[in-house]
Image: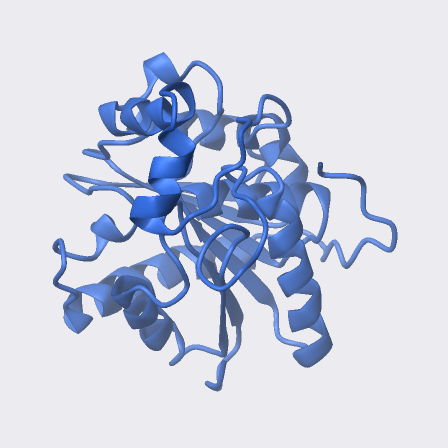
Length: 252
């Protein structure tokens, strides 16, 4: 946390990552110039318990942190999710805890029809199909994966419920996991105000502003500034605040 500015940010990592990876920490530092930043470990990752469900039940995690943020700040809350975290951010904002703006970076549109996705997503899906894959993933990455993949209420099915709060969808044209068509599908289903930012030659998630293991502050700063410039334009066009639901529906 810390930072003074007009917005409060929640950063949500992707699959096999955690809240303290260097790229996410550098982005948090860049955003901290514009307001306080919260980070979190999704279930099955980092210091959190439970089992990873690829963004389905993780919506509950995002909703819980969003509610905690509202108890600590009156600033508008912007939830920013990467890959699996983008799915969790969309589902939370649509079904559980509305935020003032959502940013989905390199996120999937639908969990089904994995054959139509990038090679990276197909390779990852093998973890659930190969005998011993879940145990091997835990041994190699420390991430605890659920034995079932989600099959309903995908980001594509619920993203339209985020409106009238704005959503910015960010994707790389060379994303090896989810092709840019996934971002285009999300954009088509989202309500206004919305924006689609396809980054030419951009990779996946943190790969949009990091060079493998290298994280250059000037590149991260440029990414953050452009992202917030686009978001500022969207928030100027937003409708009335949705507030906080007193009895959120079940996202399970």
